[in-house]
Image 1: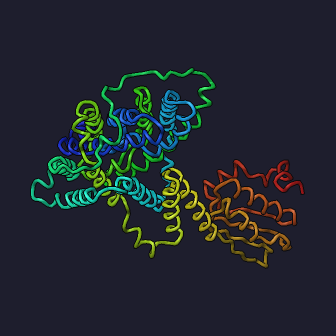
Image 2: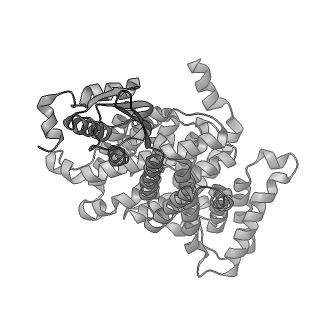
Image 3: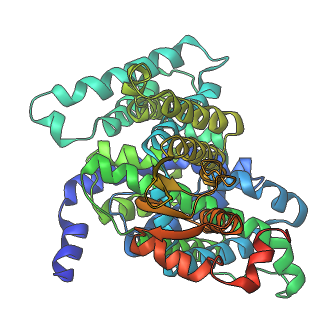
Length: 497
């Protein structure tokens, strides 16, 4: 079964994966160079990283068809470390970040992705689409009309070529754009910016190296904050990208394996002189839309990238940037959730706010992690507020027995615990109080503390208190943390009075 699945992942879509991998490789080159520049590094650091990570993740990753390489999200975190300590310390930070990501996989931290709501995910995609489009603006600013014409022509090919009978479904339209625009620019002698203008390309293969730093506690304290940040941001973006590709392809992926795979890839990249990276939504979408589905597409992208920049750099350098801009604009358009605009009128206002905050924070900071964390926190606050509103306590009185019954309905937790306490009348003279919690659930120690406080206060007023209807989970929590039946701890709960 495992052998059959591996065979399908690698050779189930050979033609589509190879062609898509070539397209992705071309799209990776300018971005890898740009991300190196962002981090204050030589272009070859990003290019070597993209090659190594793409190849390694194809073998050890958990999401076939997903592209990982050097990214802006991780590059932004490296700027200060590179400025203060240089490349060698960055390589050590990448190794340690990889170790942390492998540990995260073993600790099942990938399950935290379940806390990301649909509103946050849509905000993440919309923000990413905006950032991808904004990243193309420098190539469309202060340029001649030829660039606009070539970009528009490229977009026309991208969207119309697939409708050509037979051949339209055989060759990825982004690859056609690259070939056609390159030939057109050379044939007509059009003077426009090319990949060669982005920076000097490496002319040698990457080699194994051990970072030249002292391996001691001082080095660890220097790299630790950066390693933790790179590991967290890398995992967050990788897991969310995997989820996006899962939905696009209607397939599942092994998130635990993906965490470990990202760690192994970053360690390998650092030992070959590359920067740490993670999954890339833009390139992954290009891959899927170009027909890539298996591990071979990521492997091909990495190998093709290395071949292009080392062995055929002269040919690669003449590809016009307008062709790549057209491809990235296609990715931006395809990534943006256009239905979210119309859904703003019908969705709950809280969902719309979460989505917009995720977009605004991400675009403002140019950091997908900050945007996602902001969205998750805001979504949690809204959820806590809604659960608080649905919690209430009704009461009834049996005059024959002098028994007051409080019926609790809803979720009792940190945000509703004070509200829970306020429903009880502690000055009422009754013989017995029954707290019926058949329709309630106690979630945390704040809820247990609130119940303790209620029971103890009622008993001090002379009432006999009985709790009925606890579900198993709530009863387990109370057995472990409740103190209303422990005289030695009661004074501590009540604040000493």
